[in-house]
Each structure stands twice: as structure tokens, then as C-alpha cells.
Image 1 (cartoon, rainbow, N blue to C red):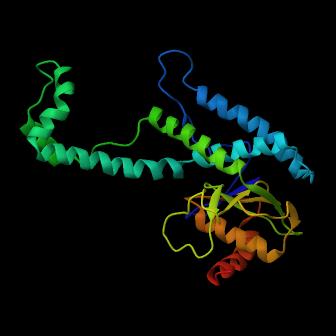
Image 2 (image 1 turned 90 degrees about the horizontal axis):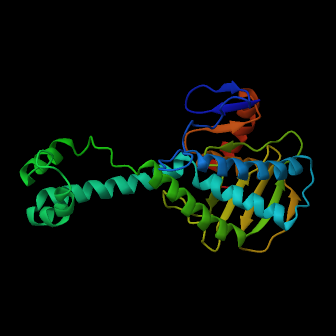
Image 3 (image 1 turned 30 degrees about the horizontal axis):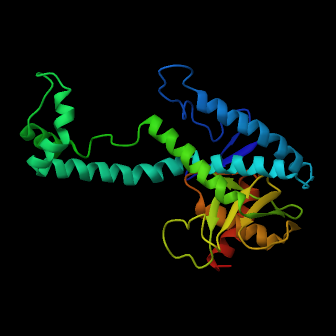
Length: 280
């Protein structure tokens, strides 16, 4: 069973339900073949990663290089395929497209130059004048849906996942094992970067030399990647679990997920939040 936490009261959901799932989120427009081809690809990656996670959950941490590579591939897509990533890309794209439309609406010469090809493809009845375009943009610019198309979003996911895979493959990975009666939580941003003394509002880049990357694989095991040397496996203290959970909370988008019920999480999260506030 999984507890799902958000700004609303938590709800206990079965793993068999759609936890952290959005129907048809990766469907694409395809002239030939199946539109859910990306979903199937992700399913294949998840199946392979599932076998490795099962091995880890059975306290067998001696992964082969191939098994580690499967986890790295899974992590790369897990980071790139989430709504938080899509929104982070959509927001600047939407702003840029609004700016372009406003520029076109303010300059008739630029409008004629940039829109010539588009206007030529329209019938006489479909065409519009610069004045009509200017008035329409003035009245509707904030109502227009200028986000990436579904196909653009999927292409962005595939590109980002490839780049992340290249970076994660260069990192050294540590398995941080929680002590008895302490558990990691996870979130809708399950793979995230962290840097000490990072004061900027957005997250640090994954390519930064001193960045740490966290991925809570199970309630008892969290992976940590770094470009620096480290011990590959270790049992950590309760304080370390609390600090990592504080970072997970801080880096979540809308939801947190845990095997702990509300009272259990309350006890551990109060300690966790104290650690975060004390900047440990």
C-alpha cells in the first residue's frame, strides 16, 4: 500500500491503482503504426528495471555493470518523463511564443515577411490582414494555448533522457541503506540534483562537478550519484535519512509518496523538517 501526500489530506491507495500515473500522457500523433509506441518503450524499460529493483529489495546490492546501466537508463527516463520536467520546458517556450506573436503584431513589415508562406497556404476566405491579426493578438494573447504539442513533448523527453543517461553513466553510485524503522520517501520528482549552499531558486545542473544526484529506489535504499570518489554501499544513520527526506520534500513538485501512514510520516517528517530548517 502507498500513501500519497499533497497539499490536501493524504489518501491510502493500493499499488494496483493508478498511483503517479496519467492516462495517455505519452501518446503521439503517428500517421502509421501505433500511437502508444512510447508507452510500450517505457514499459520495456520499467520491466527490466523492476527486476533490478527486486534484487535490491532482497538486500542483494551486488549489481553487475549491466544491471547498474539498466537502473541508470530507468533513472534518466524517470527524470525526463515527469510533468515537472514538461512544465519546466513548456513555461519558457510559452513565454517565447507569446513574445514572438506580440512582436509580429507590432511590426507590419516583420509580419508580412514571417507570415508570407503561411498566408499563401490559406484560401482567400481563410486569410487575415495585419490589422485583423493585431487586434486578435491584442484581445486573445493570454488565452492562446502555446505549449508544446504532444509530439514535441515526447521528442523533448527522449532528447533529455539521452543527455541524462550520458551524465549519469559518468557518475559513481552509492547505495545508502536506511537503519531499522526508518524509511525514505519519494516524490513526483524522484530523481533530483542537490548542491550544498545552492541559493538559486531553480535546481542545479546535473553536469556540475560537485552535484549530488538522489534517487530513492525503495523505502530502505536510496541511490546517490556523484562525480567524486565514494564508498559504493553503506548503512547510514537516522539523521542522514532525515536529511535526504528533507531534500526530497523540498524538491517535490506536487506529490510525496511513502510506505508510512500519516502518523508515522508525521513523526519522521517533523525530525526531517527540523533538520532541513537547521540547514544540515
